[in-house]
Length: 455
Image 1: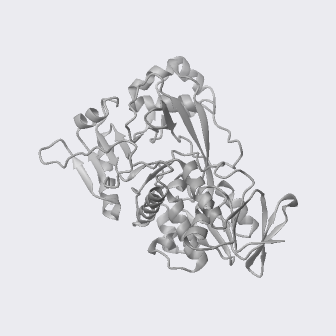
Image 2 (image 1 turned 30 degrees about the vertical axis):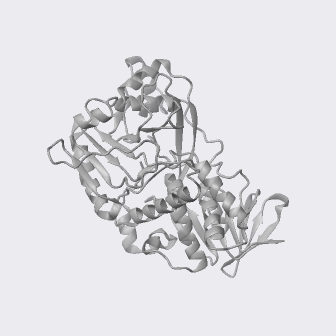
Image 3 (image 1 turned 90 degrees about the vertical axis):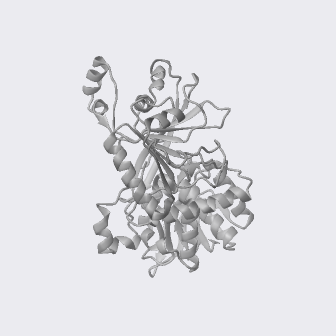
């Protein structure tokens, strides 16, 4: 029978970051990663691969947690020669609704006060602070806080392709994107150099005796690994793995699609932030199309108003024509199935939604080349805060529920996990990620009012 000091289930970005933290930064030499799929292949690269420090309350937990994670990402970028091409291109939230603009300002002031950085408001008046441009695709650490632009002229001067009725833009600055694959492979290579092992096997169960972990069982002929420390970093399978050790986890999986789109007509420039339309959208259909959709129970929803949040960003650098398009307009829980079952009409729906933000995209409704549709599952808790730390079963630790922010959160989540495992000092926010938080009556009362922080 094999032995290991620590066994991590899951070779996604969370599990790999944990192996890196334990082996490289904490000096543990006997860590085994168990996964029957290739590293980083299930969900770790299925999002926009973005990061941001701008998160709502209550409290400053998520701002502090993400700010710490971005600190660690920047350290990794510096030590690796920015192998994973991290930039600080920013996020731009846009609205054509004056009421939404007022809410955008209220929310921005709240998040700024939580420590996310200075809010600079631009109303087109003399004495306004300057609206600073950053250089595209560079990691400029001096870009912080946010710029709220409430002057339509300034918005359209910078982004002339936007809908002409836009009234406000919240441009977040300590934000951008990176290559999840390159980040993950860098962390994995470093972890393996320091003793981590990757075992291609499926975890069949966790053996618990006397209330503590004693071993893990592997499927088929792979046998068992004796260990007294197990980490559940199984992504969309975390709840299933939790049950195998007698721990029920409050997790659900949402299916999120990602469209890789060829802007072969050059509708958009490349020097852009991630751009998100913050208003609900009613799609434009012909009368015939609307009647056909209304007759199909599964498609009828597309004739109504769909939720806010359609967004896109450039992909591939200055020499590329590719864009990533995303819009989650259905949030029903799903059991994870691979490959994920995406709606065949999803790319067209996302494109139609983007026409509201970028009218020039309408040219592609008749001339679109076949896009590539990919995606995965966001595994999340009700309030969209991760589960990191111990469970009632001794030696059984959680690193899961990272939803759509696993890439940006992985370094800080792994650091927090390692502190729990090794008995090191914990940050003040650690309690807000424990499974035991749901036993706190005051926390349960807050749940209904907590925003998800999801795009």
